[in-house]
Image (cartoon, rainbow, N blue to C red; front, side, top):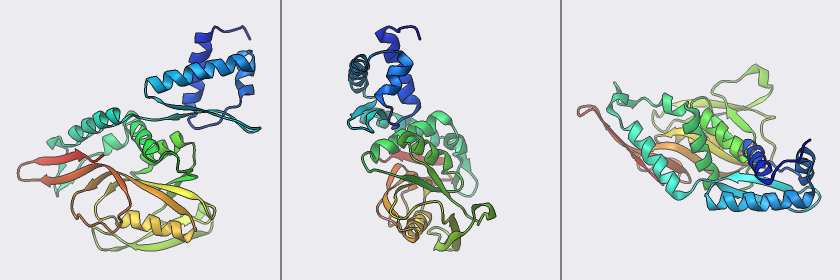
Length: 269
């Protein structure tokens, strides 16, 4: 390969690292594709690391040892989080989203790639350093959020099903009490999905009373997995006492006034 200039190498290096966040690339990988000495690559990485930190885009970490290398962990600054959540809160507070029965339309937000990618970065930032093995969610609306979070953390996504799928083999099924409807519901997960002792992060799109989140936490106990955190995109202000206490919600739905046609959503962090 033709020798590249330093700015060309750094640009390509950042593209490679950002395409696979939290993946460890060996120095040999870069010396091979750039046809450059390891010392040259080391200097490039130092420059890229300083640039990423200066722009508050995340961290580039060098790992020593035989299995070492370099990895990029995207992060999002507090100022950027505040600005993003205010924009989403304003968007969700639009009265045109009001659905008869006191509901709020939010599918377009949940399925917009840029939005869910940024939410994934926020969750990855909030739960950084937790040595997470799996991101867990329940079908279906939380899947995009969980998938993006898993991509940034570079860990697999595990989806708990509402109904047993014959293609997933033997499953574990539990009954849980829906906190909002007070009805008994069922969730199932393949026995092969999560090894015993895994560290998992639970992600979901919406929480009212917390019954579904509690069900997922109970499911993880069946697999002897350790829940390091529970991330929720939006939680209602009422009921104030949820059936789960240890969770992080990005937005709070303060209330819906159908008579005034008003929706009140605010940032929570």
